[in-house]
Image 1: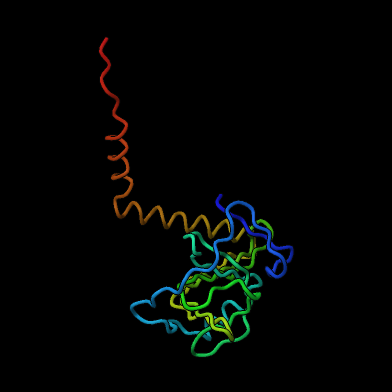
Image 2: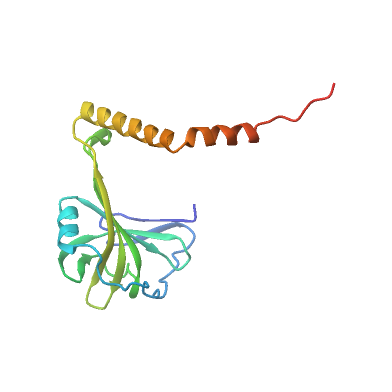
Length: 186
């Protein structure tokens, strides 16, 4: 563990308590991606997919190279991206690559929903704007029986694909060459 920051409020407002290494300060801006900073996915669709998920976390690379993870709220969107709300003083000025996770967990992970986005975060004096570049997610059914059956079917599908690609045989060959014991003379 290098550092853990905690706030008394889940929105990360108020006094920050840091355990471990000192808070690194803000990193400088990153160069923009080769394909530009504009959204590459439908922003309205991404906003719709994460608006119903109660927990949202934004992550970016801190000045010391370790991730900084902060809770965020959405305050709308337009064709340029998602407008985010973060307590003052937590986001560095300028632009950088960032990830956004939105999720809803229920007891025993039955009924789990997640959405993961990668994109470009631009922090100005007026606002934080997130332009999503990719988006993935999944939904686990809210029925334990249905969840167990679907997990079993997905595992069978993965095993079928692995067998079709010859992965078990390759693993067996690797295991046999790495575990050969040297001959013992008596």
